[in-house]
Length: 471
Ligand SMILES: Cc1ncc(COP(=O)(O)O)c(C=O)c1O
Image (tube, rainbow, N blue to C red; front, side, top):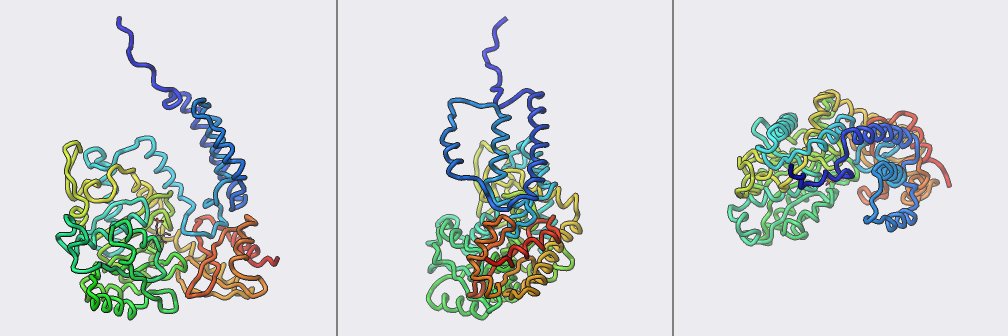
């Protein structure tokens, strides 16, 4: 009998079923215990980074270690080495505490590891994602014909919008790039947009100067007169206007640009109309808040980050367009090694990515488990949390700077609490809560956003007490 020429699988990478089971049992328990500690512990990192760097330096990859110890080390260091999004006193940037269904989706996905580039490799996941995209598109009023895909984040989805707008604007763009245009191309957002648009302009090859930052109306929303004027000026100077981007839920203040007026202008000027609803798009789930987004149904394309207010794990956004044919035009490719080549279905033929993870399952499971009603209630709950923070702060002498109906509050402290930046530094350093400093309409403000679906009234009181503590 000939000897097996293959060595055994590498046990450190592919342990036996019983070893795997033992480690998984331990890890599950450990993660649950860590979460409880995180929820009642400091929001801010406490890890000594100099010591941590030394620890990393000392890792010797020529001397493998048992996985159990490495997993314990990883969770312990993470427990002290990040701003804790799962802490209910994180009132921070739009990063959520992830919903449990979304976490389960990641767990399942990491076991099967489906390759979503092609519908032949992953027929079930590709169809499931298409269904989620259609459901959100219908909710936005984009109609049954709208299509799109999941992306890693709002930046990728917004980049996709710019490529669609360029492709739509000139039939020669795909082959010859921006030189086909009669002048430098321009696109328009408000100056309160997410500033990743500058990187997007850079990476798309149109140059950062292609982005016109239009002024706001004194209340953090795009000034539509200024928008019209900017387009007219650019045309007069021989530039080529391409796209208007309205923001539904600005990063700094949760403001919604005038979506219908921006749609009118885009239509009159023959421009692509994109709505960056990375955060605020989640208001679609709520019947109470949905009217705030009136006009969203007129967008040519839409960005919604599921990893913001829809509370999936990080790296999950939706790009939706009513002009799906443009995706196939912008991202088509042809090769013999792929198992399928269905131009309007295969994700690798309709999006920036090639190999791709099963991201859509996170939102599918959340939607299927909670329904629109449950997701809507989650979004409304955040608005109610912020309403309560607002009441308490106004009672103690703070001034509200923004008039957002969503879950971001920008506030100015009373003079005796000192300036915004040092106040925020104090609160964050205390670990009792996490808020951000920013500027809104030229004023320094404390930005407070409800991102955690489990924040309680006690957490709100703790935040307000931390903000009001004098030096
Ligand atoms: C309005 C808006 N657009 C785009 C982005 C960028 O999204 P991402 O960080 O998912 O790439 C953000 C992030 O906060 C945002 O608030």
